[in-house]
Length: 190
Image (cartoon, rainbow, N blue to C red):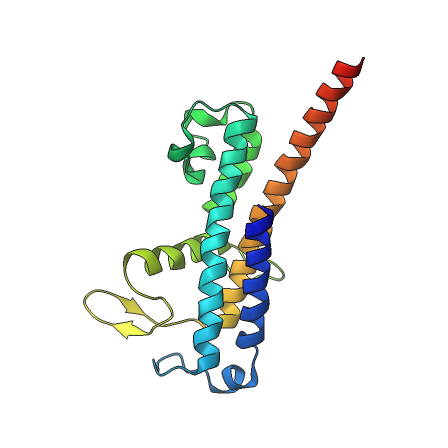
């Protein structure tokens, strides 16, 4: 987790550098697919952060699998399944599963102050598009897809906010694990 966290931070740092460069701030064109080096590098680092943030959600599910002794093999753990209150896996953390599931399924709403809603769905949708169809960073109109690329700053905000939520939940479960370990050590010493 420390390794992935360092790599996500590095990718965000580079994505910020390129997304807010003068060239990209002044010359971004939502329709044109002729991109500057700054735009290419901004999206490159954003994609890297996006894929690693997606992995952090699976790591969170693995932590829950281990901590709550969920009877499922490690290679069958999918965070959307683990945190779905309709599934049988939430025993012992039903309230937290409902909270996480509500965030994962949140509807898109950028018309609010502070943290936008629907960030996970947005980031997950972009990641899935990159994996299964075409780059969401390329504007296209065809019978296969209709897509207008977003400015890297928008993608950056949404990805950072999704990352922050995933690592907030990771931090919470790690604190619970540490407390349980301390409790067991104390019992052993007494």
